[in-house]
Length: 457
Image (cartoon, rainbow, N blue to C red):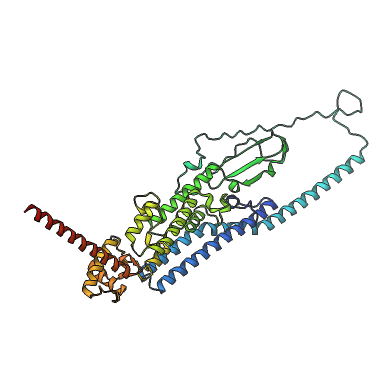
């Protein structure tokens, strides 16, 4: 497919009632291929997402009501996304089917016109050859010399001057983010008639911006040009700084929406939403070569990489941990007061968090995030006293310990606690050391108190 065929080209063709030449016919075929590819891409994405939902329902992660709700929402969304492309496919197919019959009719009419013209020429030549001289109407002169035919002047058409409305806003940043294809005036700012007469025009560049996501640059490149050969270049491959800024704003909006909807904010999901917003199938169609050229996406990728590195280290050296403390640690790394300010979605949906805290075993249930490591040590002290496992040779069952905590905080599933413990023995030794130090401190305090009481007497 030609790189110049994009959404703007397809949108321009479907507004026509018929194709005018072979160039438009070829462009219409390429546009049809582009629209069909967009429909296939949307459908394939829908199938993959539906498979994920089916897998979640089969494994018990989704309930029947949630499964039906997400399925209906996905079907509705794919119908909305495919509707404009299917209209483009239908219209372009009609134009392509009508063009051969139309061109055949034009060729037949041209052949008939040429035949009639040749017959007229032959008739005029034969009539002239039969007469020796031309005889005009009678005059006062007796001369046989014909008078010259009076000259006629061709009336020149006055140029139509089209004035550009100064109130029209063509700044992409001023358009609403809710309307991806804003309406713009159908005016091309140059003065000339598009006929087959070659006229002399000053060498200059005419540019017309339709919108931030659908712009065409119109070029007149020669001092003498035929207006029927006006070249239209898709400027989506030549983005300006403003278009980059507009795309970055759309990316920021999609990041916030994903976070507010309770989804994990991944950069590839943001890119997919950007493609749906601009109705394109590749970032190259909007002038982006790499995803990290978008400032928001680059920041999202770097933030997620830092979090992954921290979680790898956390899994190695942290013996006891809770989701509450982990959220605070991640927020402090990026100098934030709260983890939600990072706009990454819920922390329990981070893949590494799911593995560390074994959150795959819960199904959309509430996770308790107010427990701290000090609370775990307190409950471990109570559990070891109840089960009499203070001695080193006694084994501590971590699962039973978690069930003990769940019973204390009134939670049914132990995985809702948001607790991670690699080993209970280190925690037990820690509690023993604290108690031993406390006993020594109390003994020293008693001795000091006794000595003070003795010297006072």
